[in-house]
Image (tube, rainbow, N blue to C red):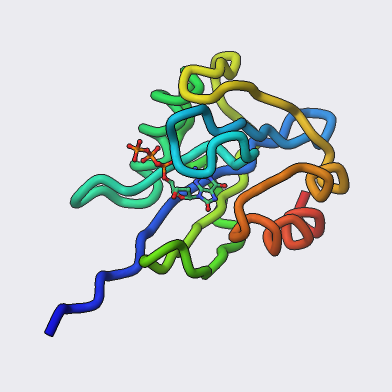
Length: 136
Ligand SMILES: Nc1nc2c([nH]c(=O)n2[C@H]2C[C@H](O)[C@@H](COP(=O)(O)OP(=O)(O)OP(=O)(O)O)O2)c(=O)[nH]1
């Protein structure tokens, strides 16, 4: 008998600017779900806390520095993802240093929450939009 694989934990963040817009990035060619817009973030490395993973991912993907204390847990999604089950933990962050650069994405965009509905996003992200709208 094959053991079921454990859920895949992914951490992501809604960076909110002074005008209440949220940063989304476009997944590049060559990655699963290429072309879809997502919140910056990624998978946990072994032994990593969710917050440490997010600090690392934001540095790697956007070249910004974030303090753990500035990451507020906001909401989550629980969705099938191929042969895995995805737990997507979404944080909100309003304070960082540096200017986000698209180091791992094909594009970045600052978007108001109602305009997120018009973007093509992964299935797990769609239920998060309304939750975010209530928080931002
Ligand atoms: N970062 C991010 N990933 C998302 C979102 N929604 C969603 O379904 N995902 C999925 C896509 C991927 O299957 C997984 C994240 O994996 P990834 O490949 O982007 O993670 P990573 O940065 O650790 O990349 P890698 O080392 O595997 O290349 O979570 C989202 O809003 N943000």
